[in-house]
Length: 309
Ligand SMILES: [Zn+2]
Image (cartoon, rainbow, N blue to C red; front, side, top):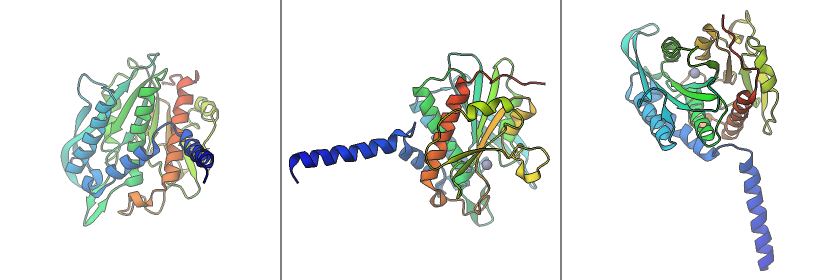
């Protein structure tokens, strides 16, 4: 090959790589790697109170420190709370939320959340919970990095909740121990299971309750090969209604509007086979990109107003 041909070919390759990366607001390989670490066997399924759960918490806090994102309360990222009983079996111990904050130009605050706990070891089976919810946790780290570098208008609280699998305990403790009015919390964006969909669909649930959030969610361009559907929030539709299915429910109960991002249940949902290898990385990257763009649109929207009873 002549020199100029080599050079044009190189430029051509660089352009392809750039076109591929340009559609993401974050580093997609870091996102996948974070997912891999959080759902690895060494974290033992991240059950509340376990060593693996503590390792997940440490991984999150180390990253927040590296990103220079400060804790929400004083110098401590971790908000501990006691759990006296869990589903079916008596158990006591501590749950631990990880809370951080990125200041905005406004005082009004959006809480972006994901639960970092999962089921742990049940019987002889290890439940790694890659989609549920290592995917939302790693996504929240990517979102943290994005908004630390591209400052939002709203103040953003990053909430990595614990004990969701025991009945939304971490988020309950959070909403019951913060002055929602004083902190001007106007929205919760919750992420729980965002990494796989055979139909290439991500759902945003909540606009049936809070129609003012519909417009911002329809206002931005989507990446290729993914659909953002609004729904799974019609009262009376049984299991098809996801309003009470994850941590956003505790905000909703207090009258704080929410948008919950998630995928439809799959064959590995709450099974020991919910592993990293089952995740479609390509879909996962696109899904997180949709969520970043959605938060940007919600941040800019003027329709985010408190709807408290
Ligand atoms: Zn979950």
